[in-house]
Image 1 (cartoon, rainbow, N blue to C red):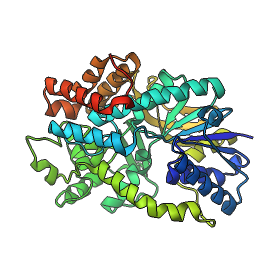
Image 2: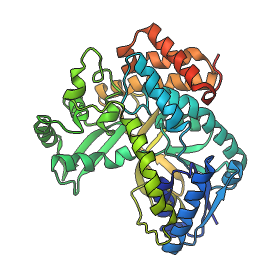
Image 3: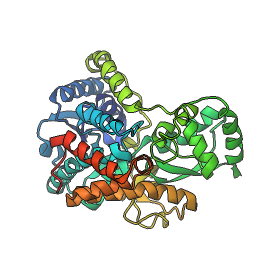
Image 4: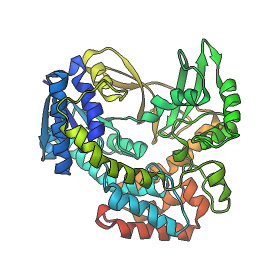
Length: 432
């Protein structure tokens, strides 16, 4: 019998999707679904919800909740990671409010930017704790990382944790279908090739029956840009750099130096950029959870149909040997030669009994590789700060961040980092 361990199992809705999918997968029957979360109340909620799901689906999977992380991991074949260190209150609030005092505005703050840097710095030590446990009690397990910042955390688990890891993000899956839906195009039979880095991978090819669909996409997108809509930043990037990017406009607004600018405040309205979007979502989610909890946790006739989450399909491919293709985050072992070898890249991967095998992509168009490298610079310096414990590398990561450096002076960046270190307090390790 196998074991799938879910770290951060208090993410009840996500646990329902991933583990509910496992319950509906024939190759995963009789697996133990091991749950771990530091929030014991949320852990109990997820345990009850999943037991209801076992009953209603007729699955032979067993749900077991653990209060001891090492025991939850012991003997695991697969691990799903969905933790968030520090949560909305206090850490996300800190990540948004302190930069605001310097005039630095953000939308999501979970990838790069000043918010992404500090989210990484408080999460990396926890991930390396996981890695030590995994080395001890389940060294051959595959680790599926869903936690942001995706590129850095996946990189750290592989490079410094020595754990077999693939990072999984929804943006590759939904990129083309959502674009086509927004433009009123039919996505049936459309072939795509997508590669780059997480949240900034590129729709490199989009064809149907061998015909390039980009001219029609750009024609329709130009029409859409005449009125306000939710995806204006991505269309703007496509017109200027030639290709559509995987992650949403609210995300990409803060990955580049072009959009959120005190010198050009009119861009916020013109490109429909939702500042402070992530805190808004958090507040709404917290409010809606109270209502949702009643339905989700206590419904003994809870239903589930297999979702589009990659996890169960990965496990199934590894168990059965029937290959499955996905967009995964892996180390750049020559896969995209014009990006650094130290970087984590997002490329097509094949999964079967031998694990996750990334595919060779080749060089990106030079302008796209250049945009990726601006974000990779900050990612690599953030890792350097976390691993060496040197404060100077936190400053370097922020100084090299495209949005932060476009808005603030070097002295202000140092001062902002110091303020954030102080405000985060014990959520961060000590830096020297």
